[in-house]
Length: 273
Image 1 (spheres, rainbow, N blue to C red):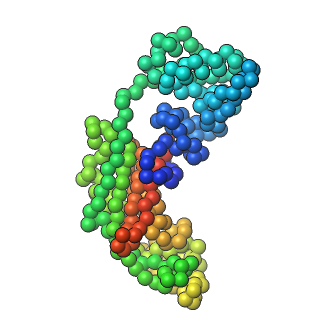
Image 2 (cartoon, rainbow, N blue to C red):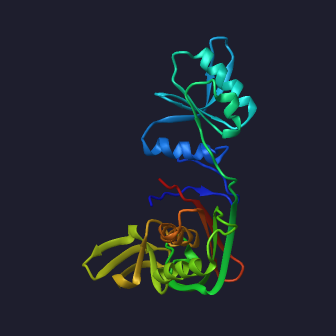
């Protein structure tokens, strides 16, 4: 499973790799297919027809136009495009309920779908906790070595099958395995790494409290691509969870609480190819 992520808000949306907010799951599938084929596209592209009328097409590519037919007005729009742009390749994707209306048209792909129900579950458990140490050199109060015990809540969003998103037991097992990877580690920004002898990292930096120069066992140290903030730890936990999720999971959210009633919530879409 190839994955990538884009930060979303707490409401699930269809967002492509360009950051476009799409209208449907079908449009998301088309966008992912074009990205996989490395075909450049513009979404909701405004065209000026010969008549001077402006019209927005769903996907504009160098090879032609792709239209999604979900409602009656899309049929009128598609026919208009075929008349006004006779030299342009135009392909439409339509639901079978429009089959009778589309049967006389060319370049139409009919797709059959079942009603798709998107749902979410969230899990809290006393075992979803980990201890760690970190230093935040850019924050004076936190620029000394100190530690936390953080609790974790995980949210999963995706397509339900038989009214079930994912078995809680399976989800709990995966979450505990991933959290164990981060438990009892020292987290630090990788930019402070000055030497790696194979068994140890040497970490050095100047902070508000003076210079730190530490030699740390590699098996107890976790290098991050940014500062060891609770937000970055949430993102790191998502990166570890995503490859272990079943195919119907479309977004993963993580809450990490650093102490009482404070923490970070990050939710990321899973892009699957």
